Length: 178
Picture 1 (cartoon, rainbow, N blue to C red):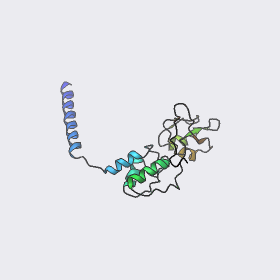
Picture 2 (picture 1 turned 180 degrees about the vertical axis):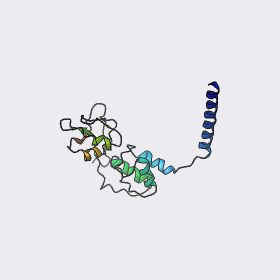
Picture 3 (picture 1 turned 180 degrees about the horizontal axis):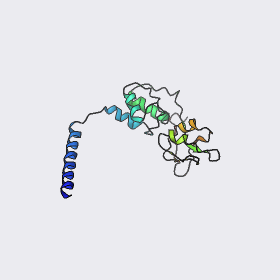
Picture 4 (picture 1 turned 45 degrees about the vertical axis):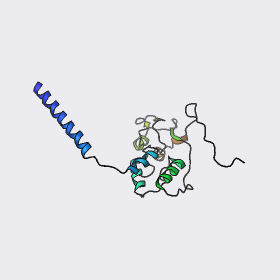
C-alpha cells in the first residue's frame, strides 16, 4: 500500500512539473488588442451581441467582423470607448442608453414551467417544476431571454430600484454654461 501511494505521488509530481514546463515553453501569444477590447466590454457574458461571450465579441471586433454597436448592455459609453480604441467613427444614433435592468417574476402569474431558467445564460433564475421561480439580482444581466420564452408573461424586465447602496451622483454635463 505504501509503495502505491509513493509511486502515485512521484508520478503526479513528475507529470505536474512536465505540464508546468510545457505550459511556459509552448505558450501561444494572443492578440493584445483582444484583451484590451475584452476589458472594455461589460463582461456579462449574456450573448445579446450574437457571440457566445465577451471573448468572442472581442475577437470579432479585433478582426473587424462586427460593428462596435454590438453590445446592448454596454450602452453609449462602451460604444464610445470601443470607437476610441479601434480608431473608427461611432454612430450613436442606433444605440439606446438605458437604465440598469433586471428580470422580475410576477409570482401570481408564474406557473413553474421551468422554461425561463433553462434559457438563462447566467443561471440567475432558480425554481423547480410547478414552483414559483425567483431571480437573483446579482446574477441577472437583463438579456431578456427569459422574458421571450415565458408563456404566461410573468417575467418582465424592470429598472433596478435606486437604494442607498446603488445610488450615485450623476456626472455633470459638459458644454457651455452660458
